[in-house]
Length: 142
Figure (spheres, rainbow, N blue to C red):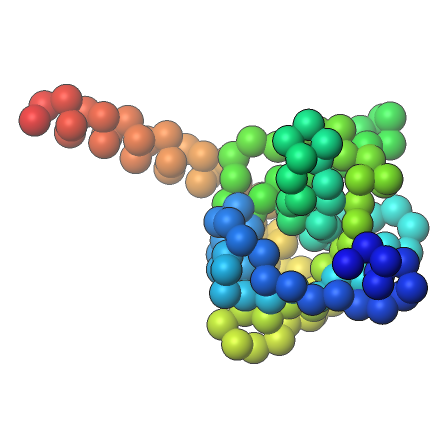
């Protein structure tokens, strides 16, 4: 995959996992990657390699550190991931297929989705914590 990207050819594959839901349905939807042209931008979705866990991950750029590293976050995750550097980045998503239709990461609809997912994150955190607390109370009362 890396060799094909280095030659300037796009690569497509179906990622597993739930971290990018609802954008990507793990094991079903397909992403198309290209080699990044310079630094990634806010809300770009990238495939990168984590040496600590020996895993390939597809997450979104949600911030930048002063040392030049990226802050990454899956759309369905709570915890941010720090310390991702340019040399860890393998490819950046240019298009993706969701429920059988191709979507472009340059469309207005997609940009709206990115902003919505990022800026409503605090509300989703409160919702998850409240739901988890209620679940514990209900199970405790049984």
